[in-house]
Amino acid sequence: MSNENGEIQRLRRTIEQLSDQMIRSKEQEERTLAEFSDMNNELVTLQRLLAKNNNSLETARQQAVDAGESKSAFIAGISHDFRTPLNGILGMAEMLKLSPLSEEQENSVSVIQDAAKLLLKLIQDLLDLSKLEAGQMRLELGEVDLQETINSIVRLLEPQVRKNGNLLSINYDPSISTLLEGDSTRITQILINLIQNANKFTTEGSVRIRVILIKDDENKQIIRFEVEDTGIGISEEDQTQLFQPYMQTERGRSREYEGTGLGLSICRSLVTLMEGKIGVDSQEGEGSTFWFELTLGKKHVNQSAASTPEYQVEDMRDEATSVSVLLADDNVINRQLVMLQLKKLGITQVDAVVNGEEAVAAFHSKKYSLILMDYMMPLMDGLEATRKIRSIEMDEMRHSTPIIAMTGNVMQGEKDKCMEAGMNDFIGKPFTLEILSKMIQKWQQSSDATEVLNMSIVHEIAELNTDGDRTLLGMLLDMYRTETPGKIEVLRRNIVSGDHIAATEVAHDLKSGSLSLGIRYLSTLFAQIEQFAKEGQSRKAEPLLDALLPAYQAACASLQRVSKD
Image (tube, rainbow, N blue to C red):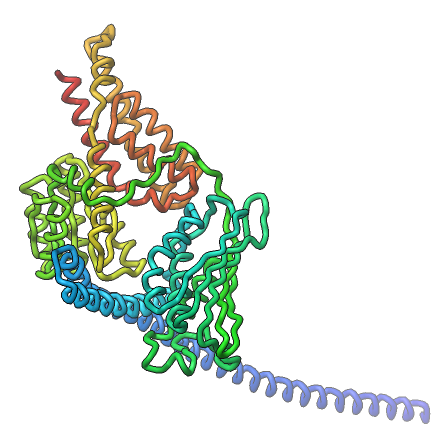
């Protein structure tokens, strides 16, 4: 009995222990659930906060995007508004200087030109900074004849340097390759900025340009550019902030030296864009040496390449009698200026209109060699007018007339819009007589080569008879019509996507097929696109794409008429 009582007691204790453990487990579970509930509530709260923050961030991002777009639009408008009257001032001053003037009058005109050029430089600095900040600055890679680039810069700036009583000299390393690959425009911009800066802070001294080969590889060279002056020098404190926007040295901020304080910041940004480095060595009172280093690709010299003809107004006049120009610009000063410039070049067949609607109406009624189209005009702007003109050409199977955009807005985005609308080229205000002459010569020569068919080849094909009722020319034309539109679309896609190899093959095939049928003008377009694609520069071929379909339609229409005859 005692054993049974003892067993019962042990069981009771065991049950009590189990009950106690179950109670503690239950309490632990409840505490765990409570903690989990608290954590879940915190998580929900965090999710709400995160969602709220995401909304705030998205709002802030959109506001930043809107602000950037507003800034770009503002800069674009300011650019056009400033450059349009500046074009009139500089252009009229240039025309005036070509007239017989007394010495006093010549000096007055020179003052006007210098003041307007200074204002233009300040505007250009602000625009460049805006483009760099917005990531819109793009490199245009091509051939760089560095020796000729340096010589051109010296010819341009030597009068300014002499005016300050300074001597400008060059040390050029002869082991640098004759032709390199890079962005010649940006290299020139940096050097001009540094040389002008050196000259501004130096009087009765010297400015020396050094171009040194640092490293020579099979496919590239590292070049160091130095601009040394004997001017006022820069303190160590100022050197640490010198390449920041709007930063000027203490002496540079004085009224004696004009500028925005943006030049060196722009130089640094451009060098960085070209994956180079830039710096300065200077001691206050002992002059400065600004330097930058760039890696430039080597380019093999093509001896058969044609050289660019020198600018001569007389040459332009010899060709000008057959040139007819449609000028569209709402600014009366600019219209008068361009008409005077054209007259100086011997071009007298000029129709001037004040908006896009009038430009389209004029194009409807008359054939022009060239159209100079202002970008911003009332009623209908230059972009819309260009689109309508290209539509008319397609509907009526006309040749594509060269359309040159004229605008004070030189932002890359605006240039792209001009090309997308169907314009062929771009001339930024203000422009000189020389720039206008070269532009007209470039596109007049292109326009002269727009004979639709090579009639000797066409007649040879037409004289070959077939066994059936249809002529060989008609059969070949049908085959050409079946295949070509699809191939043109494939070529367009390859060019836009940057597939250089595929674009080269398709353009070559289209060129060969067109030549075999005696289709002259269209084959020259395919040949130009093929060459750009071969060089890996498909972007340069994009403006030619809009000319393909009108040229194709004109060729087919001409061949159809010959086939029927």
